Image 1 (cartoon, rainbow, N blue to C red):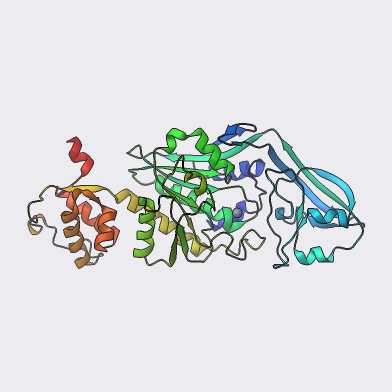
Image 2 (image 1 turned 180 degrees about the vertical axis):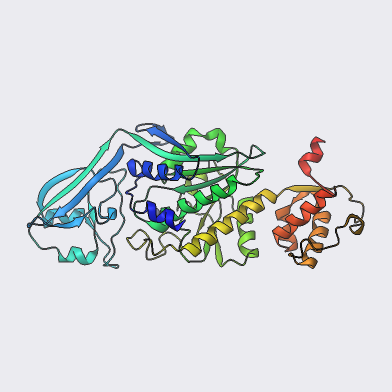
Length: 424
Ligand code: ZN
């Protein structure tokens, strides 16, 4: 995952343009990703797909012709979506177009101007203070023309029509945690789930933030109704504890499943309530959809010093943190897959487990007492009304132990999924 981030880090991405296409083409080498192209001007609810932005070079030269700010050194140096310009001007005329962070004077800020035509440069505040009076020449060799908005979509079908959504944004240029970490973890999760048997279908979206989610929802209103659980992944590669922001519903299965896995797995974490700010959960949880989609993060946008600066770089994301995030997500998906309602086929008093060979630990791996308790809890609560997650919450037993007990009880016919019983 860190290699993937390293490979994609230099690309100048935006909400449209060739940077996004290069990123999606790279992912296509690892995943059977569909790339969708939506023309500029296409309406999407209250929005319209903007003109496509591309950039090849940008610089500020001083009176001696030296590049004092150079896009080739860092793509963060350009106000993202800058309109093209080439002219000479004084430092006074240039200043309104320069952006810096006085409180973090050595870092380049990341700034955008997608929906208001503007041009500008971002630079370390220390460098801004050192600019001499005099004449400068600025060049932004960009194009803003009718084109397309590009996004990637990957669907792994499951046995059921119901779907799990995993979404990440792909619109930030050289920023590692905010954008690339989510892309890397989502890509590896897709590879992992692609090799598993699946009850749910899994839909992965690699989309430009905000406009990409709005475009996808506007084109997929029927599909959206099949989404039973969803997660937006962002800032998941730094070593901070996990932060899970709940869906607008607040008590959706995904909210409870993530909380269960975080708590039972002993992961350092905090849970936060939904707010209509942040990433694309804002769109998925807009009232017309109100999808059960939460947001998984480690560091939280706006609350870490590296956020939207050149310090959100390859050193800020760590392989161990990425691996831990992937492990957490495979466990969450494992719990969602296991979280069914069952019916005890022998509900009149306890069935005799010994004669069915169930009074023994499996593989010697699992805690024997916990496993016995899991058998009893699953049998007792499986009246068709309680799901495995309900039983995990009520019993306090590890969900994976309950899942293992469920497998054993199904093998001897003591539990059947509620749906199967109804159709039988
Ligand atoms: Zn961001």
